[in-house]
Length: 404
Image (cartoon, rainbow, N blue to C red; front, side, top):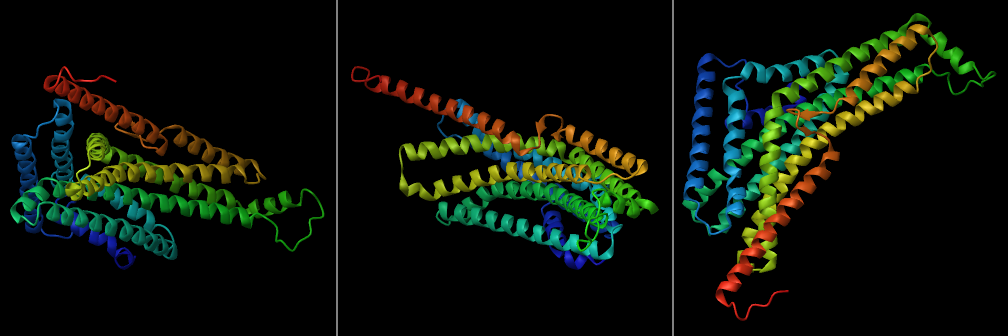
């Protein structure tokens, strides 16, 4: 399998992830190289943790307590999430590699041409997401440098506290999203195989139907050797493996997804409130800081959307399989039993929602709930800000204060 050529972007992603301590070392590396990788992961994790703890200690901006709490919650969140990623990269690396290895073995069982096509599509998707991630975080670094007027020491410490853990977490999100994308490609191939099977069971278009039951009779001739049932059983076995691997991915990344959702939601609320405050009293001299906050909003919102979208694609593909199976012409009891088993399995899988640690529904329909929580927190922060301004106004000029 020449997947190393067609999926070279995946290898590049793994290399960058290993350099940033969020992916385990390669199996082919020797014991000394793996030991060096583990040591580097622990050193980088300690550096990130030290920067986050130091930022929490020295943070002394004047703001309401609840606002300060929401702002500082990003740092414990970064500490926990990066610790989870490094744990899987160092101490739990056999389990961390196991699911991905099984996915590649499942692809390897397909025809050579099919596997090559799947890897090429996956390589394009990997390139697209990896380039977007690197360019985005590069833009964040540039904006940070300009915002601090090219003060390199301040910029270095700021990027170490904000952009470095943010990039590590983004690479962790990419690892999950791209693994699910490979499973989605396999499911898409199953739909294509089922569509081809339906076409083979129909009479040629040039034949004139002399009887209303001709299509059924032609399909029964095709199924006489049991080929349709055999193909369906193979497709069902492949789907079973896909569904099992998807559940294993959720087990592996469940805590990471849950922590990422909570961290991104709190940070998104705080940054959105900060943007609101800026436009309430615009100070265009600090426009670069506004642009930085907008980038942070895009990053946190993008993480949530990518995770929900890739899982939504899996559910949509399952629904497409379900529809295609229902449209098949049944010509024998054995074929009917095969189709029914496949349908029951699909219905059971679709009926069980994909949950992160059994808490968050990984579906784009859950965006309504996220938006509701987001608006409630932001409105709460706005009310607190307005209340503080009212109290300050009363204290400064109680006699001339006008209540509206």
